[in-house]
Amino acid sequence: MFGAVVRDALGVARGVGTRPPAGGRLPRPVIEIVERDDGLITGVMAAGYLAEPDQWPAHDRRALDLVHGRVLDVGVGAGRAALALQERGVPVTGLDISPGAIAVCRARGVRELAHASVEEHAAAGQRYDTFLLLGNNLGLLEGRERAPGFLDALARMASPGARVIAQGTDPYGTTDPVQVGYHKRNREHGRFGGQLRLRLRYRELATDWFDYLVCSVDELSELLSGTGWELSALDDTDAPYYLATLEHRNGRRV
Ligand SMILES: C[S@@+](CC[C@H](N)C(=O)[O-])C[C@H]1O[C@@H](n2cnc3c(N)ncnc32)[C@H](O)[C@@H]1O
Image (cartoon, rainbow, N blue to C red; front, side, top):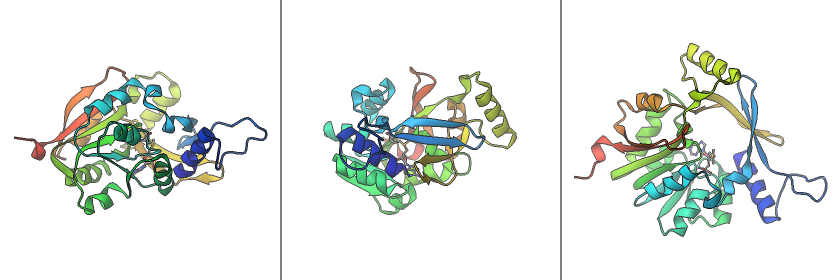
Protein backbone atom coordinates (compact mmCIF):
# COMPACT_ATOMS: atom_id res chain seq x y z
CA MET A 1 0.00 0.00 0.00
CA PHE A 2 2.65 2.54 1.08
CA GLY A 3 4.77 1.28 -1.83
CA ALA A 4 2.01 2.16 -4.32
CA VAL A 5 1.71 5.64 -2.76
CA VAL A 6 5.39 6.49 -3.11
CA ARG A 7 5.66 4.75 -6.51
CA ASP A 8 2.90 7.00 -7.87
CA ALA A 9 4.30 10.07 -6.12
CA LEU A 10 7.59 9.35 -7.90
CA GLY A 11 5.66 8.94 -11.17
CA VAL A 12 4.05 12.35 -10.72
CA ALA A 13 7.36 13.97 -9.78
CA ARG A 14 9.19 12.52 -12.78
CA GLY A 15 6.28 12.68 -15.22
CA VAL A 16 6.75 9.00 -16.11
CA GLY A 17 5.54 5.66 -14.79
CA THR A 18 2.30 4.86 -13.00
CA ARG A 19 0.32 7.81 -11.72
CA PRO A 20 -3.24 8.32 -10.50
CA PRO A 21 -5.54 8.73 -13.50
CA ALA A 22 -5.53 12.44 -14.20
CA GLY A 23 -8.76 12.52 -16.22
CA GLY A 24 -7.02 15.07 -18.36
CA ARG A 25 -3.54 16.46 -18.63
CA LEU A 26 -3.18 17.98 -15.20
CA PRO A 27 -1.23 15.82 -12.75
CA ARG A 28 -3.24 14.86 -9.67
CA PRO A 29 -1.54 14.94 -6.29
CA VAL A 30 -1.00 11.53 -4.72
CA ILE A 31 -2.72 11.48 -1.34
CA GLU A 32 -2.29 8.78 1.27
CA ILE A 33 -5.64 8.45 3.07
CA VAL A 34 -5.35 7.88 6.82
CA GLU A 35 -8.42 6.34 8.46
CA ARG A 36 -8.65 6.29 12.27
CA ASP A 37 -10.76 3.86 14.28
CA ASP A 38 -13.14 6.63 15.40
CA GLY A 39 -13.94 7.35 11.74
CA LEU A 40 -11.69 10.42 11.38
CA ILE A 41 -10.28 10.60 7.85
CA THR A 42 -7.22 12.69 7.00
CA GLY A 43 -4.83 12.83 4.06
CA VAL A 44 -1.09 13.08 3.62
CA MET A 45 0.35 14.68 0.49
CA ALA A 46 2.73 11.97 -0.67
CA ALA A 47 5.03 14.43 -2.45
CA GLY A 48 6.44 15.22 1.02
CA TYR A 49 8.01 11.76 1.15
CA LEU A 50 10.19 12.76 -1.82
CA ALA A 51 10.96 16.30 -0.66
CA GLU A 52 14.45 17.79 -0.74
CA PRO A 53 15.97 19.00 2.56
CA ASP A 54 15.26 22.68 1.79
CA GLN A 55 11.53 21.81 1.78
CA TRP A 56 11.64 19.87 5.06
CA PRO A 57 10.57 21.10 8.47
CA ALA A 58 13.62 22.61 10.17
CA HIS A 59 13.73 19.89 12.87
CA ASP A 60 14.23 17.21 10.19
CA ARG A 61 17.26 19.11 8.90
CA ARG A 62 18.59 19.44 12.45
CA ALA A 63 18.14 15.67 12.89
CA LEU A 64 20.68 15.03 10.13
CA ASP A 65 23.25 17.08 12.06
CA LEU A 66 22.81 14.76 15.07
CA VAL A 67 23.78 11.51 13.34
CA HIS A 68 27.22 9.95 13.66
CA GLY A 69 28.90 6.86 12.19
CA ARG A 70 26.90 4.16 10.42
CA VAL A 71 23.23 5.07 10.20
CA LEU A 72 20.15 2.83 9.96
CA ASP A 73 17.21 4.85 8.59
CA VAL A 74 14.32 2.94 10.19
CA GLY A 75 11.18 3.14 8.05
CA VAL A 76 13.12 4.77 5.22
CA GLY A 77 9.97 5.50 3.16
CA ALA A 78 10.93 6.98 -0.21
CA GLY A 79 14.46 7.61 1.04
CA ARG A 80 14.51 11.40 1.49
CA ALA A 81 16.76 11.29 4.57
CA ALA A 82 18.92 8.39 3.35
CA LEU A 83 19.61 10.27 0.10
CA ALA A 84 20.51 13.46 1.98
CA LEU A 85 22.92 11.50 4.21
CA GLN A 86 24.49 9.71 1.23
CA GLU A 87 25.01 13.14 -0.32
CA ARG A 88 26.99 14.12 2.81
CA GLY A 89 29.10 10.96 2.52
CA VAL A 90 27.48 9.34 5.57
CA PRO A 91 27.22 5.52 5.41
CA VAL A 92 23.49 4.81 5.61
CA THR A 93 21.23 1.78 5.22
CA GLY A 94 17.51 2.24 4.60
CA LEU A 95 15.27 -0.34 6.29
CA ASP A 96 11.59 -0.80 5.54
CA ILE A 97 8.94 -3.51 5.71
CA SER A 98 7.34 -2.24 2.50
CA PRO A 99 8.82 -3.85 -0.65
CA GLY A 100 7.40 -0.99 -2.73
CA ALA A 101 9.14 1.60 -0.56
CA ILE A 102 12.42 -0.30 -0.97
CA ALA A 103 11.90 -0.36 -4.78
CA VAL A 104 11.30 3.41 -4.85
CA CYS A 105 14.40 4.02 -2.71
CA ARG A 106 16.45 1.91 -5.12
CA ALA A 107 15.05 3.78 -8.13
CA ARG A 108 15.99 7.07 -6.44
CA GLY A 109 19.56 5.96 -5.78
CA VAL A 110 19.66 4.76 -2.16
CA ARG A 111 22.56 2.31 -2.25
CA GLU A 112 22.19 0.21 0.93
CA LEU A 113 18.71 -1.17 1.61
CA ALA A 114 17.16 -3.84 3.81
CA HIS A 115 13.66 -5.16 3.28
CA ALA A 116 13.04 -6.36 6.84
CA SER A 117 11.56 -5.65 10.23
CA VAL A 118 13.94 -4.42 12.93
CA GLU A 119 13.90 -7.91 14.50
CA GLU A 120 14.78 -9.61 11.21
CA HIS A 121 17.54 -7.11 10.53
CA ALA A 122 18.93 -7.50 14.06
CA ALA A 123 19.30 -11.23 13.35
CA ALA A 124 21.47 -10.36 10.32
CA GLY A 125 24.22 -9.20 12.70
CA GLN A 126 24.79 -5.65 11.41
CA ARG A 127 25.84 -2.87 13.83
CA TYR A 128 24.99 0.83 13.66
CA ASP A 129 25.96 4.04 15.45
CA THR A 130 22.70 5.91 14.76
CA PHE A 131 19.10 4.79 14.33
CA LEU A 132 17.18 7.53 12.56
CA LEU A 133 13.39 7.61 12.85
CA LEU A 134 12.05 10.59 10.92
CA GLY A 135 8.60 11.49 9.62
CA ASN A 136 6.96 10.83 13.02
CA ASN A 137 8.49 7.36 13.04
CA LEU A 138 8.75 7.39 16.83
CA GLY A 139 5.22 6.15 16.14
CA LEU A 140 6.70 2.73 15.26
CA LEU A 141 6.96 2.12 19.03
CA GLU A 142 3.16 1.65 18.79
CA GLY A 143 2.50 1.50 22.55
CA ARG A 144 3.30 -0.36 25.77
CA GLU A 145 3.18 -3.84 24.20
CA ARG A 146 5.34 -3.26 21.16
CA ALA A 147 7.89 -0.69 22.39
CA PRO A 148 10.13 -3.02 24.48
CA GLY A 149 10.62 -5.49 21.61
CA PHE A 150 11.26 -2.76 19.07
CA LEU A 151 13.78 -1.00 21.34
CA ASP A 152 15.46 -4.31 22.18
CA ALA A 153 15.97 -5.03 18.47
CA LEU A 154 17.66 -1.62 18.10
CA ALA A 155 19.83 -2.34 21.17
CA ARG A 156 20.98 -5.63 19.60
CA MET A 157 22.14 -3.70 16.50
CA ALA A 158 23.79 -0.91 18.52
CA SER A 159 27.53 -0.25 18.41
CA PRO A 160 29.06 1.19 21.60
CA GLY A 161 27.86 4.79 21.97
CA ALA A 162 24.96 4.31 19.54
CA ARG A 163 22.06 6.76 19.55
CA VAL A 164 18.48 6.78 18.44
CA ILE A 165 17.40 10.08 16.84
CA ALA A 166 13.61 9.97 16.66
CA GLN A 167 11.05 12.59 15.66
CA GLY A 168 7.81 12.64 17.60
CA THR A 169 4.84 14.93 18.13
CA ASP A 170 3.17 15.84 21.44
CA PRO A 171 -0.54 15.38 20.68
CA TYR A 172 -1.95 17.07 23.80
CA GLY A 173 -1.81 20.82 23.04
CA THR A 174 -4.99 20.69 20.98
CA THR A 175 -8.45 21.90 22.00
CA ASP A 176 -10.13 20.19 19.01
CA PRO A 177 -13.01 18.25 20.62
CA VAL A 178 -12.58 15.36 18.15
CA GLN A 179 -8.95 14.91 19.25
CA VAL A 180 -9.55 15.56 22.95
CA GLY A 181 -12.43 13.04 22.95
CA TYR A 182 -10.31 10.46 21.13
CA HIS A 183 -7.46 10.84 23.63
CA LYS A 184 -9.89 10.44 26.54
CA ARG A 185 -11.50 7.29 25.09
CA ASN A 186 -8.08 5.78 24.42
CA ARG A 187 -7.01 6.37 28.03
CA GLU A 188 -10.24 4.83 29.29
CA HIS A 189 -9.21 1.68 27.37
CA GLY A 190 -5.73 1.60 28.95
CA ARG A 191 -4.01 3.03 25.88
CA PHE A 192 -1.93 6.17 25.52
CA GLY A 193 -4.15 9.09 24.50
CA GLY A 194 -2.31 9.43 21.18
CA GLN A 195 -2.01 5.69 20.53
CA LEU A 196 -3.67 5.91 17.14
CA ARG A 197 -5.43 2.91 15.63
CA LEU A 198 -5.10 3.47 11.89
CA ARG A 199 -5.34 1.97 8.47
CA LEU A 200 -3.99 3.56 5.33
CA ARG A 201 -5.86 3.65 2.04
CA TYR A 202 -4.81 4.44 -1.49
CA ARG A 203 -7.04 3.90 -4.53
CA GLU A 204 -8.43 0.36 -4.09
CA LEU A 205 -5.79 -0.67 -1.51
CA ALA A 206 -6.00 -0.70 2.28
CA THR A 207 -3.62 -1.87 5.01
CA ASP A 208 -4.74 -3.84 8.04
CA TRP A 209 -5.41 -1.84 11.19
CA PHE A 210 -2.25 -1.02 13.15
CA ASP A 211 -1.20 1.12 16.12
CA TYR A 212 0.92 4.23 15.58
CA LEU A 213 2.05 6.17 18.63
CA VAL A 214 1.89 9.93 18.92
CA CYS A 215 3.18 10.53 22.44
CA SER A 216 4.39 13.23 24.82
CA VAL A 217 7.97 13.21 26.08
CA ASP A 218 6.73 12.03 29.50
CA GLU A 219 5.00 9.07 27.85
CA LEU A 220 8.17 8.31 25.88
CA SER A 221 10.13 8.30 29.16
CA GLU A 222 7.63 5.80 30.59
CA LEU A 223 8.17 3.53 27.58
CA LEU A 224 11.96 3.73 27.93
CA SER A 225 11.89 2.61 31.54
CA GLY A 226 13.59 -0.79 31.88
CA THR A 227 14.73 -0.93 28.23
CA GLY A 228 18.29 0.33 28.78
CA TRP A 229 17.61 3.30 26.46
CA GLU A 230 17.61 6.74 28.12
CA LEU A 231 16.55 10.13 26.85
CA SER A 232 19.86 12.01 26.59
CA ALA A 233 18.73 15.13 24.70
CA LEU A 234 15.53 16.78 23.54
CA ASP A 235 15.05 19.39 20.82
CA ASP A 236 11.53 20.82 21.15
CA THR A 237 12.24 24.14 19.45
CA ASP A 238 9.45 23.41 16.95
CA ALA A 239 6.94 22.15 19.56
CA PRO A 240 4.66 20.22 19.38
CA TYR A 241 7.22 18.44 17.15
CA TYR A 242 10.35 17.19 18.89
CA LEU A 243 13.55 15.28 18.29
CA ALA A 244 14.42 12.79 21.02
CA THR A 245 17.98 11.50 21.33
CA LEU A 246 18.27 8.18 23.14
CA GLU A 247 21.43 6.50 24.34
CA HIS A 248 21.84 3.00 25.71
CA ARG A 249 23.01 2.65 29.31
CA ASN A 250 25.27 -0.31 28.46
CA GLY A 251 26.64 1.22 25.31
CA ARG A 252 28.33 4.43 26.48
CA ARG A 253 31.85 5.10 25.25
CA VAL A 254 34.34 5.16 28.13
C1 LIG B 1 5.44 7.88 7.80
S1 LIG B 1 6.49 6.99 6.68
C2 LIG B 1 8.03 7.86 7.03
C3 LIG B 1 9.04 7.70 5.92
C4 LIG B 1 10.38 8.39 6.13
N1 LIG B 1 11.02 8.05 7.39
C5 LIG B 1 10.25 9.89 5.99
O1 LIG B 1 10.48 10.59 6.97
O2 LIG B 1 9.96 10.36 4.89
C6 LIG B 1 6.65 5.43 7.55
C7 LIG B 1 7.55 4.39 6.89
O3 LIG B 1 7.82 3.37 7.86
C8 LIG B 1 7.63 2.09 7.25
N2 LIG B 1 7.28 1.13 8.32
C9 LIG B 1 6.08 0.96 8.93
N3 LIG B 1 6.17 0.02 9.89
C10 LIG B 1 7.46 -0.41 9.89
C11 LIG B 1 8.19 -1.36 10.65
N4 LIG B 1 7.60 -2.07 11.63
N5 LIG B 1 9.48 -1.55 10.39
C12 LIG B 1 10.10 -0.83 9.41
N6 LIG B 1 9.47 0.09 8.64
C13 LIG B 1 8.17 0.30 8.89
C14 LIG B 1 6.53 2.31 6.23
O4 LIG B 1 6.53 1.30 5.24
C15 LIG B 1 6.92 3.69 5.70
O5 LIG B 1 7.87 3.58 4.68
